[in-house]
Image (cartoon, rainbow, N blue to C red; front, side, top):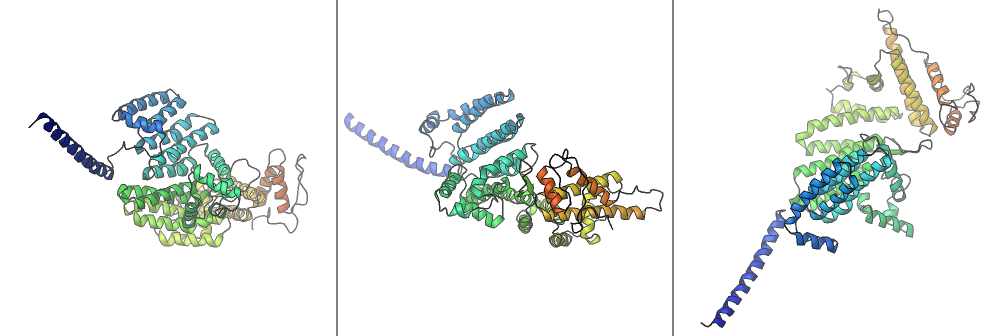
Length: 510
């Protein structure tokens, strides 16, 4: 065999081997992707420089990202946050498909770095940075990763929605202002977003999709299923991202675990509870920050969410049942405060039916639902905080309820005004009833001042031009109570008297 023939045979063999290796590589790549072992596949929609860099570095990407991670940690310890944030961007560029990198860096910005600043505006900027990192970049490279959806929902639910951060009201106010142009003054505008008719409406829908990554049609589905929600508040967006994560989980069931589904559902029902507790923006012209109140329309769906979750997560059903019981107790009490007596009685009855052998007042070991009326329960909730043996504490509680009542009257919350006044009188009468009961015993309680005297003191304070409410609020209260004299903005406090047909503002207790 001549050398030329040998070369031809070897060349043909090399071509055959290369072809076979190529086919095997396709099979290996498919198996690696199916098993989730591939973390360095070419990026989709990435900038050319980033795509080139990640491919060129190959296996050195991990070593470089580890070095940058240690460097970023040192910078953060030394309060060099902006340099640390830049390194965080480089780390995520090097490991774009490593979910834990995105989750940690987003959480680090929203939680660790934000609280290093005292100014709420600075804190809010870092919370936004954490959200933007996950929403705008993390999901770009990992659109089907359930953990990122869960973390986004958690940021809205916990960091913005709860009150653990003392700048939480600033976050809520800023977010409400940002979302109002899209969802309207009541946070429920979907028609103009789903079916825009004007240029402005089309622009709003486009910005919502492109900047905030919110699909109006899917948001409406979420609202129909879990709402009505006020989409100016963070809880609605927490539910949106968790629901979107559940949708992705159904599309890619081989990439999720039962634990992933449980955590997403928890974000939903916990956010719904928060929405029930403070899911309505109260129109109060006398404050600059957002003021929130309960969303009573959610009560049935919150209850259903708890019932469903206990069935779907039996291992944690006992823990969930405690939260469910607290919700039912709060629902009855908040509706009583808002003078929704029939609804309050409905949920109080359901609480007794669902948990008949559980105490509903912490300071009363015999406070089973069957042993209490709705009135006794509501009064007991107040006494849990103040105790019912202290004359000063009870007087302060009655005054606090009356102050809250008149503040609600000033902003047009008439039902809350009536409910809070009713509760104040019930607390007053309960103390006096027990005082009369113990009057023949050695341990005699100090009697409360007359109810009309407490009420008058509260009104004097609220209507005082120097120390009381703003002029417009004072004028509204005076008008609503039918007082015969007006309250000038800069005049000394003058004695006013209710008209004969005015609401019961200062009548003595019967």
